[in-house]
Length: 403
Image (cartoon, rainbow, N blue to C red):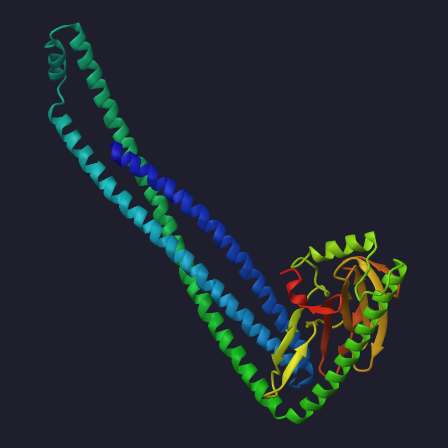
C-alpha cells in the first residue's frame, strides 16, 4: 500500500513537472511560429504588389528567397512541436502504464483482503476475539487493531479510486495529445507543399531573369555608380564632422570624433542597443543583406552591400532608428533623396526617400518619420536602403535591429 501511494504521488509530480516544461516550451514555439506565419503573409502581400506589372524582377526573386527561408523555418518549428508532443505522449503513456500496474496490484491486494474479511465476517467471532483477551490492555489493543484494519481498508479503497480518477484524466489528455500530433503532421504536409511551390516559382523567376542578363548588367553598373556617389558623400560628411568636432574642442584634427559630454551619452546609448533598435520602417522584409555576396542572377558577379535593403508596402515612411540630429539631406540621381542622422560617433543612413520630412539640424526621436519611401512604379517595389556607420566603418544593420 505505502509503495503504491508513493509511486502514485511520484507519478503526479512527474506529470505536473513535465507538463509545466512542455507548456512553456510549446508556448514559445507557437509564438515564434505565429511570427513566422505573419512574415510569410506579409511577404505574400509584397509579392502581390510587385507582380501587378507582370514583370520579373530581382526584388521578386529576393522576396521569394525570403519566403522560402521563412517556410523552412516554419517547417522546422512545426517539427519541433511534433517532437515535443511525441515526447509528451511517450511520458504520459509510461506513467499511465506504471500507474495501471500499481493499480492492478492494489486491486488484487484489496480483493484478497475483502475475501478474507468476508469469510471471517461474524459478529460473534469479533466479540469472542475481544472476550478471549487475557486482560483489559490486550482487549483494548485488539479493539484498536480492528478499527485500524477497517480504516486501512477504507484508505486502500480511496487510493484505488483516486488513481482511477487520475488515470481517466490522463487517458483523456493522451487522446487530445494524439489528435494534436496528427493536426501538426497534417500542417507540416501542407507547409511542405507550400515550400515546393515557392521553390518552383523561384526557379521560374530565376530562369526568366537569366534571359535578361545583359539588361541586368547595365542596371548593376548604374547601381554601383550610385553606391560610389553615396559612399563618397558619407565619407565627405564624416571628414567634415570630424574636423568640426576637433575645432569645437580646440584640438588638432586627429581623424576621430571629438564628442561633447552630451554626444558621448547619445553615442554610448546607441552602442548599447545592439539587437534592440527599432526598424527603419514600420514593417518590412530584408531583400538584400549586408556585405559581399554573389549576385542572385548573374554568375561570377559579386555584390558588396554597405547596408541592407528593406522591401515594404507602398506609401510607407522611413523612420529614425534612434534619437539623433539630422546632419545631411541630399539627393543622388537614381536613389532619390538620402538622409543622414548622427548619434554621437554613429551615423544612420536612409536612401530612396521620395519626400523628406526633416531638415539639417533637426533633432529627431526614435521611430520618428523622416520621409516617404520612393516607390518604383516600373516594378511596383518600395525599397529602403539603410546603413549604420561607426566613424568611418560600416556595420551590419541587421544585427542592430530588433528581432
